[in-house]
Length: 411
Image (cartoon, rainbow, N blue to C red; front, side):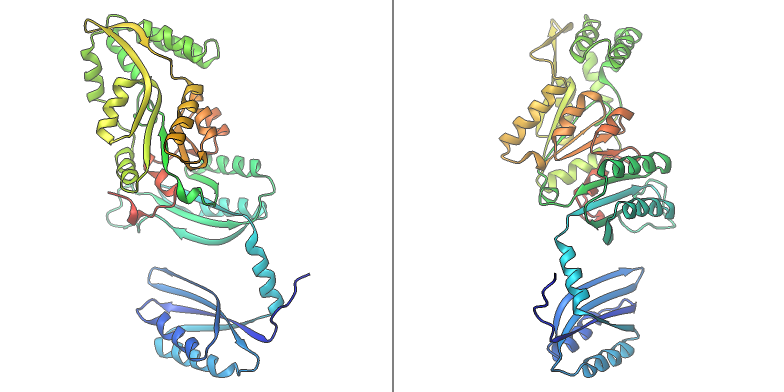
């Protein structure tokens, strides 16, 4: 039972709406100050020059309510604003206060064009799960009708409170909407770690770059079809990653070392990669490539994107030719997870502060280990298993998942 510690107060909620202009909030709060009221809650939002302001305050019952309400009404009229007064029962206020101990989560919607259907479907899922939306915030910039070339992105963040009835079903439902409606949806707990990520680990092939390097080398060696057949056998589960890796690089024997530079110079970066790394660097994030690909290309990207760490497989070269062998341990899925843990230890951070991004099955161990694991334009199995998926937009949308606004992102 809620104990009413202070019932000798009258609670009033005011809602102010009208054209946004300087001085509105200052003028109204000065009146509240003159009447010595206590502010219990306040919120303000502006959409297309239209201001919405809400203030919940209390007045001792020994004081008269009418003078403050009269002064507020007169000032609102003077400012050309509409104002509504709503008395709140103390028991209802206390019930509302008690809800604020509940778990909070963040739902992020990211689309080329945000449509009413996107919001309708997502908010319905939220409601079905017994969650309550506290706040909706636009993170992306304002879209111009004249200059929009289709490459812009609309991002909104919903702060929701409560514990989902079935979090697995919630994520499946979000994934279904994402697939059907061309919108990326992320659901993550709003805790201290979400606001304090420090390390981002990336797969390389088909994640940071829009190709598989071994395929590019195989084409130049004239063995693409053979390499592709081994890749398909591995995908069917007939070979593990290490077996398929060794068989594929063996086919590259005799390829001239200069071909690697030619391939590196023409690597197609994934959409949003440069914008993402500029922003991560500005805000002090450490970045790493953890790849089953090759160190030569990882080091090329390290220089191009100013990446801090690279762990990949090294191709053996003798007399300017590839030998068809590798040097050192093979970086597979378990090795990626091991290196992620090692980097977190080196940077003295919690695993919850790590983001991992990849597209393939061998990325799942690190994706599942990280505090924020993202399947990026990934295979269906990886999407279904990962915590989050980005399937529509570019790499730079990761910045919205860590809470950055468009104005904070480096162009």
